[in-house]
Length: 212
Image 1: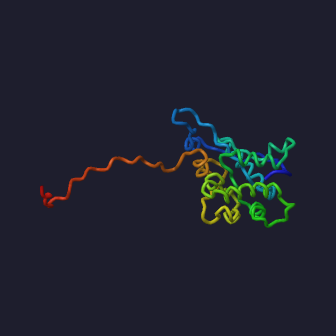
Image 2: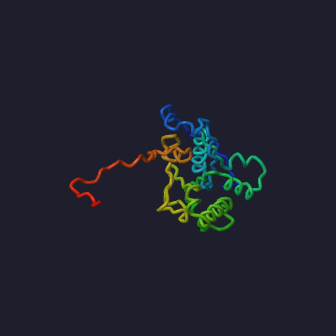
């Protein structure tokens, strides 16, 4: 969400142990050169101060661990055309994290007056259009995220709340967001082994040779 931003005045509760850091190594290309970090936009509603702190903690965690995460807080320090800013962030991101909350769901589903939460309504409209145009591609880019003290039921229904994958963040550590980090950094939990050659199997014994 964008527009009227209330900057959180507390430090983020972000931590990572050395063992957790080792679990998510730096992403590399096949040539051994470090890949560019994934550009990620965080779309969220300003439900209340506690929820804004949770979103800020997620942002800090991602940026501290190899992800180019972006949200509206730094942008609010400068004059903006918020509609253009949101469009550029949604279109320019490799991934968009949709943070579930009661206010986000209401605004994304058009169940609040139009003058309330204009930023979320605009972002959600852009995301909804992408789903309508190409659901398969949209599912890979727009990722529902459920933070601590939030629930799956607040994912917008048109994002496949019950059928599509969502990412639960249990706490603001790498371990608490491991599944999300694996997807954003292209480090799957289970690698697919290569297909080997088929075995050479002789014919079953006892069969007569074909007549010559």
